[in-house]
Image (cartoon, rainbow, N blue to C red; front, side):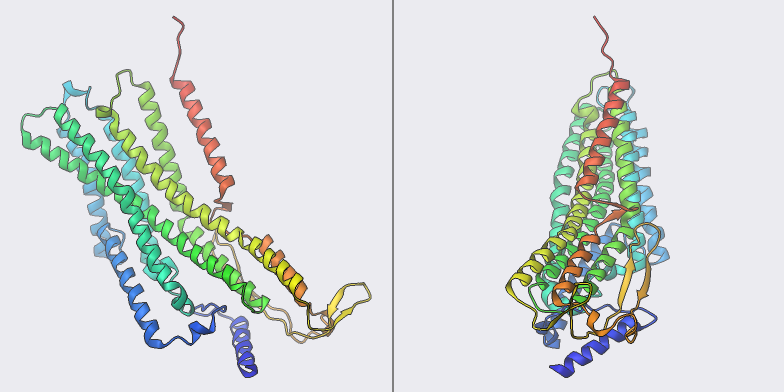
Length: 460
């Protein structure tokens, strides 16, 4: 056991002292069961996860997110512009009926097409850029966890299936609402040829389904990335039940916070543009509906309701995933505090404690300090990494009796977690309940302002 501990410490010290970070980060807090797992079992499980990721990548390719080559990039954007923008605008122009504005208002239809195309374009641009740059495994952060595959791989596969199921659960009802609305409009808006009505029906449903699926798929991918990190934090909380060095707990937490910083950096533009486009779209809709002097029914204004449902669903998926991982990361400090209290009350240090002249209790044994890889948050400008090293042989400044007791180590660990909560951030703003409350009241203020400018009550 002792030679293994010495070799393990040398490995950690070499990783911390190198000028370059390791190419593959393996978690330090792995159980012996994972280390002793047969290689054949690991390969079989990796095949299962690999097949699931390959299936997910194929699904994203069909939607145009896989733009790894120049040909696929050009083809993806040609399909997007043709199906998502040119086709519906052309159909609205050719199928416009001058005497049918009671059932089809052209300005309403164009506003919906533009808003849906903007959301789908933002989603396609941001997600495809990350997939092209990092690949599906690094995009989901499942490539750097080889030491945990035995414990967490089944949860990865289950979470991927849940995210795809969630996408289908929300897409199918919206598709049904859109199809019913278009069929009703086809019955009320006559055309000279019956085939023209059917062509308009199929074209509008195809375009709307494609744009909505792209937008909801991007939101579902962000939801999946965040929920995979929830699995990592839950596993990290369980590791506190075992015995391990405090320094390794801190290193592992730094690594998890670094992953959250990467997610924030990759998706901050997507989240910001998504909020902006949805807000502008909703207020444009509010202006048009309140300023319209005619009667608004489900036939001429039903697309507003259907598109609003899709936009709200996408926002809810993103906000729910971001707040969930943020609060789960912040809850680690509470779990560590509970663990610290239980350890302090149920056990005592076996080492002899010495009192310094200033009255501070200090441990008499010596522990070689370990240097940690510190990763600053990359949620504002760019990811930055550097190394903070403490001199191992500087006995003049750090004498042997200055090493901390186990209690003080745990106390420092809890204080570190409280000062470094982590979470998903957008240019420094942590996405949690407080930010959601702020967004809600800002939107409510804007709605009140718009209604005050458009709705006028005149005395009789």
